[in-house]
Amino acid sequence: MMHTKDDVITLANIGDGAAMEMFDVELRKVLKNIMDPNTDPKATRQIVMQIGFKADEDRDMAVISISVASKLSGARSYMTKVVFGRDDRGRVEAREFDLGQQQLFSNVVPICKEGE
Image 1 (cartoon, rainbow, N blue to C red):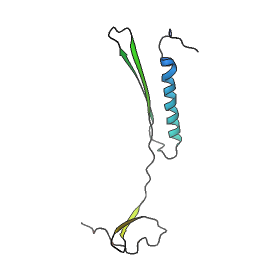
Image 2: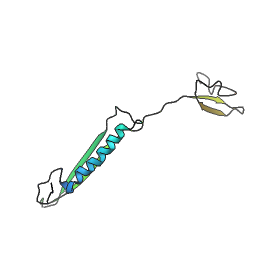
Image 3: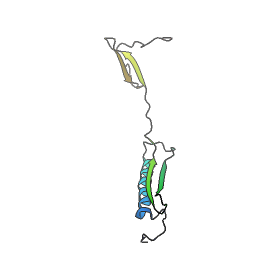
Image 4: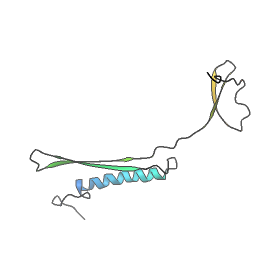
């Protein structure tokens, strides 16, 4: 349906449909984020739409501002373990822990003793 400037303002026709278009853009972002396997599936995503009205002094006209933003789920955290030791010169080294590895360091020395 074609809207004219004589139509009463609705969400569908503000700015010739700008509010609805802006919402649809953010909706696509939310749906894409939900389907991303690297995000938390249980996280709540949000679309926040703000429509502001600023009237002139005579209150016979107003400027309408429209903003739409999405709050998405960030990437899932990835956890790993590292073990610490010292090299032959006494410098601290860290290596990612892997049960399949025999010995990670040639000279395993604790970084600090208990109680330090």
